[in-house]
Image 1 (cartoon, rainbow, N blue to C red):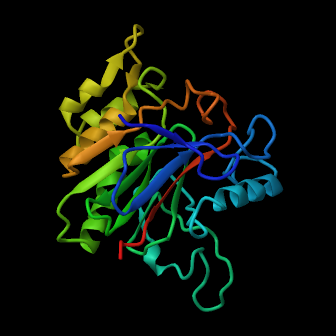
Image 2: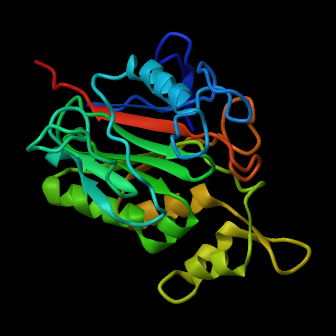
Length: 272
């Protein structure tokens, strides 16, 4: 796991992974913003009870690190994939009136347009960045256990394959999320992955608790397994746990009502 700490904009911190031809990507830390506790300080979620003015200022600070306004999604733990190329300009606006619209309701987005940042917000769920080896098509996905079990990563990859049917290979980066030592789940979660429609082999990603009714789940391990089964050649997990790193990340399980960090990715201009 090659996790690199970076400063995407003055005063902001975040992490990224290995160099990736044609792609820039990073996940923000919670520092460098103006939100007050318990959402201090770079909360980027407008749906968690924070002061809207603070969220706007935090997003403005993040915008300095990006080539254009990012596409934010209304995430619902589903599997829908938004075709971001249909969005005119760098933000979500109605093509006819130019008026700002509500965020698209989806848990993933794909684009082939260069310089168009895609955004995923998380606070324990996994943010996943996907692209082909040549950086021709980009996808991002919000993968909590529900969306992961239901196929959000496979749906995202399918949408990307339709855009680049001749791609010579695929790779993915799994950003910060709750780690296997902290993610306690019940039998419904285990059944979603190992029961009908799942794979009994994925029981290896669940460690039984002493009470016999709960497990510790390796969400990133499950994401890796599903991506590899779907044909992604290189999968790089970040390895950072949102629950244990309170200094870096928001965690809904650790702090109910917490803020949200974001993972941003965009395609860079081709050389020459």
